[in-house]
Length: 430
Image (cartoon, rainbow, N blue to C red):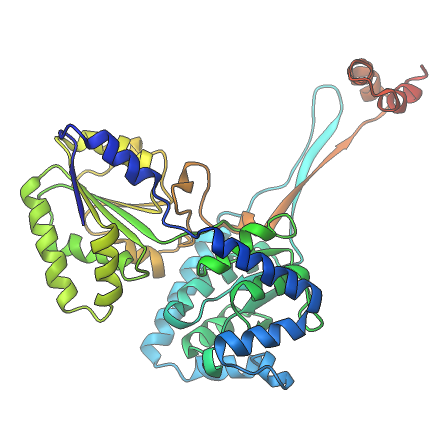
């Protein structure tokens, strides 16, 4: 774990190294992914079957080996313990309500020259949702991806998920039933992203691909952007906690580890104005790790990528937070609003001592698919807009064209595009 103090002479250089560290895939991953994409594009289902058997130990022989039936998802939902089913339903309802409020409005108006202008929003026809398997089999992520797509009006929802040795998390199936997913395919990795983008003999292509995944999945989405739309290129998870010394050190330690347990290359950062409290949190992290089932992963993440920064005053924290542009930012202070007003770059912000980041992962309502790797400088979390596109429209009559047409002709001629100018001029009788 790295410890920095803003008053130290070498702080600026050390902090710049921290900001510049992306903790993401290297050139070898990019080359491997490129080869997989080409293979799936060229050989379709044959390539998918070979890769799935080699990487996941699951043979795609019969039709039932390729897809998970809707009835199987319904049975998984019905089999849930009542308390867990209620929790899943509550999460879905809150996610749906929050995202319904994001739906954009069409515009249709006439300006002072009599020109009709506006824009209409329409959903994409089909969305592909990637759901990781193995360590990262999260039903919450399925809800966070599928529900905004449904709210946006997407008609066809397709899931790809790896099923190592044929096994699948029943909670994922239950969530798929709750979200009314149309298709679930037993393929994962970069090859699944290729299948969704290009289509194969069995899997029809989609328009947008969203959802978390490992370095190969993220790289596949990056390379296929333009063939399809994507939510973002996601890297390892990260959390930044800004906390004063009046917090419970155990609470803050638990918050830091809540992201560290995702992946050995996840990053947890604490900024505090109390050096003694920093020591208490470091000790509390060690205590928490001793009792944590995910201690091996969380411990490696904290040891290798964890950071504590001691500042002279929390007034320094927003500038540091904006440079880090973290996925999650907790403001664990009595009055978070002044700090919040200064935070310009963050995926999502959690205000006050009683708002742990984990409530956002599951139940609060806002989407937990958020920009990582400092991309919150220019990107936002997943929303209904990721599954929609805007089409503008224009309507002129004779008088309107007379009002603005000559300017269009002048600009077209100035740009050396006479056919552009001619298409307007002929309507003006020129």
